[in-house]
Image 1 (cartoon, helix red, strand yellow):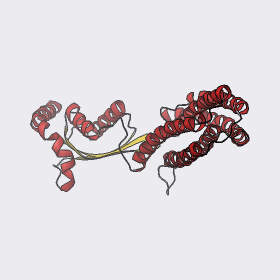
Image 2: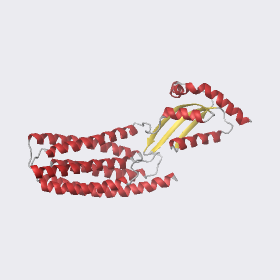
Image 3: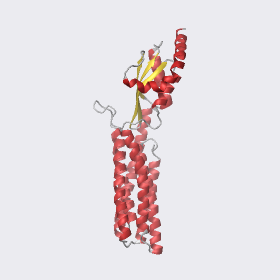
Image 4: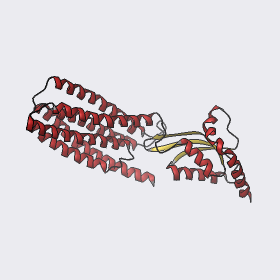
Length: 322
């Protein structure tokens, strides 16, 4: 069931990404030409931004394509991580381009350039519409789930603001002839870009370093499992990470020898799926207390509940045999 849903959303994402890529690439070229002809840095800043957008969308597109590949003996998770890697590379590219734009803006304060306001205005307005179209296309995707589609939508949102900035700058230049507004606005666009790039960099790096998904707290998960399933005495060796959009979990549980081993295992899996949306969990059941240095990971957080559970679990066990 879940599988067919993710397939459908992947196809939807692919179509939206391809359309947004086409629109963005086209207008990036228009902005580069317009920026060079009119002499506007704000337009070039926006075009630089659109270049990373186009790259972002292309990477997202390739990543969606690769994520569809079936797992094999060599890549047992398939190539789902490519989407995260694409988001990571993307964020770094954004930061590099921002540095270049800031450098050029600072140079322009000392050496102001003449700017053709009318041409700048026309292209900035066209760029705004192109961005609105791309943003609308992407925002209909399952972007809250997919880091890549969200990365692409973030880029386009930054662009939207960039286009608005370029329009404002063009109007000011046409009315007053005050050209420093152009590098000032390109700096503001850069700040917006850095903000989105930084959060994207942090998030993708966290995933690449096998960090736990944001909505899962491993300690809390261990405590709740011990509290809500009577036979579970202790939870340790908990490892939770994310591949693509899927949380993956492995853990050891020390249990009272169950009346129905498979039934208990099924209840644990059901609990993890129900409360944490973890469909892929490997659970090792043990009847002896854990011994070894790594056990501390699980024991500290449960020491407090231990006594309470000895009692509850023994009652549960006795109850089973009735």
